[in-house]
Length: 104
Image 1 (cartoon, helix red, strand yellow):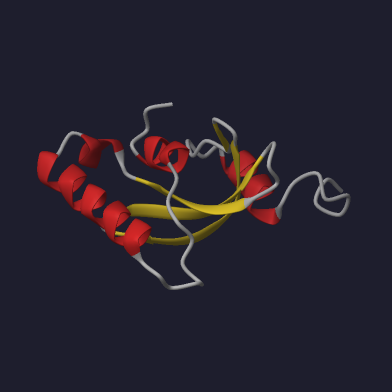
Image 2 (spheres, rainbow, N blue to C red):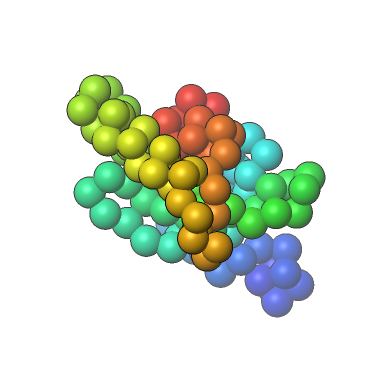
């Protein structure tokens, strides 16, 4: 019913029902869907609550936030994305980077 009324996305409903530890709100961002996952973490489609802007947020597992090499690799990835001139690649923002490190 909440999905039909567009109060929750299917992803959010499934996360709530499963008892997942994945937060659905990170600062000003609301996670809408899981885009993918890999060795460096999970990537989510998110929406900024005030600016109504979509973003991709990457969350690193807690274990990787303590690994200096993994953190540096992630920082290089953020810099590479920020310098990209590809129109389909969104520019990283600091709130998304902070969320990725679990510093909220």
